[in-house]
Image (cartoon, rainbow, N blue to C red; front, side, top):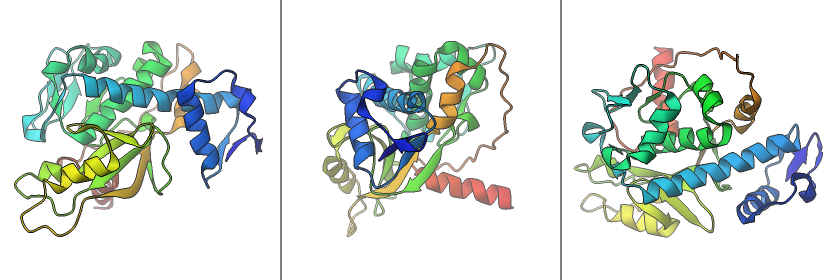
Length: 281
């Protein structure tokens, strides 16, 4: 169900919509969750960004970017410094928007694991929606490693079996082969019509991803891979506020520590667990 300023949403409030817009709205209306917005514009921003996330996922799937472990991470050093732990640190003097776009422009130069792939997709999707000026003001000092991200992306997770197009989910492979721990699971973007995009696997149905992961289990494995009820998303409402910022906006940033765990393909809640333990110690 969708509510705008406390009242039920009327389909005509957003004007003419395409098939993808309507698919997202239909999933929202079918949900037991009530999606609340201050305005129709705020709702439309979320729809546009969800669609952009799916589009960036399709573009990554069509690109020459490769799956790689942290040890095998590589990139275009004109834009990124590849750190010792397998992260991408923005080079001095480079515009963040140019660096994110280079993943797609020079895709054959890049290889990374699937959590970092989601962060790249998020940044690319946001860039397309809010434009270079606002993007560079919001994200001036990019560092991509696992699930580490800028606070203005506002990543959060919930536990639910109701997923929307553009949501990120996790396929867990608890009996993964210890010789190939990068296949402990797969972070994937929810696409339309029952498909998911996972970096290194492609755009597949849930059962196909599970079958692929099952072939990468340890000898004697008894537990199948499965789709967790974990859903990750950016803060659409927070980002919507920044889509009309003045040219002089200077966001205050919390400095979030990077957690160098060296475990490829972990889910977001596991990274949050590591992060919480750092702050508790």
